[in-house]
Image 1 (cartoon, protein in one colour):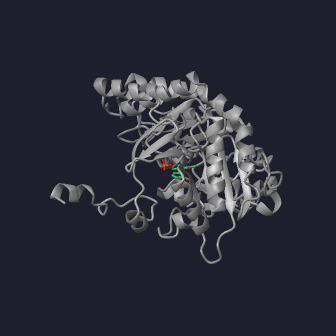
Image 2 (image 1 turned 135 degrees about the vertical axis):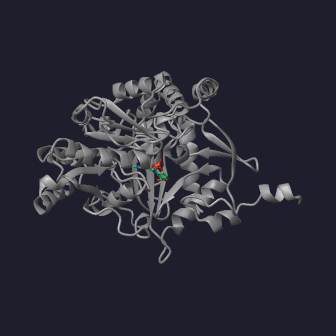
Image 3 (image 1 turned 60 degrees about the horizontal axis):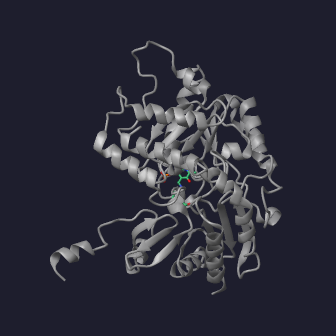
Length: 439
Ligand code: PXG
């Protein structure tokens, strides 16, 4: 082995994110290329992408319009300063998103990831109340099992203990609603769970405890993806909307996973028929090609900042790469692809077939619940005694060996294929998971 080869094959330097580094490096799974629904590994195997990357490649890999748009953009304008300066595609993209967004969510703040979108929305919420003379509204309310990225605001309102416990005291003034995961009452429900709308009433308890005039915002995922695909019970999101509105509290939907067609509509807000005050997005915005996030904010929130002298910066927040030209080009081409290939409609039309296929796994060994919505699915397994997460991860590895890539979280297998998936590929994906569960 010459020096060059040794360096190229050394896996030690890369400290991998959210990965069991030592286990991975003993037995690496490496992707060389991808197209449409499939990856090709460095050892030449074809593996179906059952998760759209990390819930982001909604239009499938290397969608031609996006590839071409990025190629064109890098030849034309690679970067432009984001502060006190603009370029046309950022304005065009913001207008397109405002048109796509529900109701009065007409203003767009660009970020580079879901985590940054969350921090941005939380900061806008605090600054909005201050701008309106209610600076006492500083409390933020999240939810148990919530995932809002990995930055300090996001892990503070988030509710996944492993993401929190190593990192100190986090933000103060944060409280958490109870989660809505309840297999005992809602196990194996097709569609929205029947039980649990009353869990939103806990917000009334917090209002009574802290005083509404101290609460800035509530942030929830309309459908909680990372914690294992937890669906909102019937009436739950409506109730949260009603209580927050009545008490002047902002409602933020974290739609980093659910936005851009994952549920068969542009946004989870459309799917569930509830309009929040802000929506955080990322992932499917650019099909994963270039990092980008966007926060959609209501007219009222935006307008509250547009006061004071004209020459003053209204919001002291932003990123070097907010509205980056390369990312804007990718996002515009992604939105074109979604529209021209009717991918949201396609996801909606596959929803029943997808759920039917997943529910066929009901009697497989170890299965204790199945959940499905849009093109998202989850199969929850009875954990092995004293070895939490192992059963799901073993199943994942078996499916990988059989040519299908899935995700695990705890002892739940999560699936979120690209929206271009064919019925025969749904059969293959679910069939492979079934065989992995049998093994
Ligand atoms: N909010 C939500 C609701 C998310 O799902 C983030 C924020 C953070 O996004 P960034 O771009 O900063 O990672 C997410 C991310 C999984 C998985 O397998 C989920 C996410 C990321 C990676 C893996 O469940 N969600």
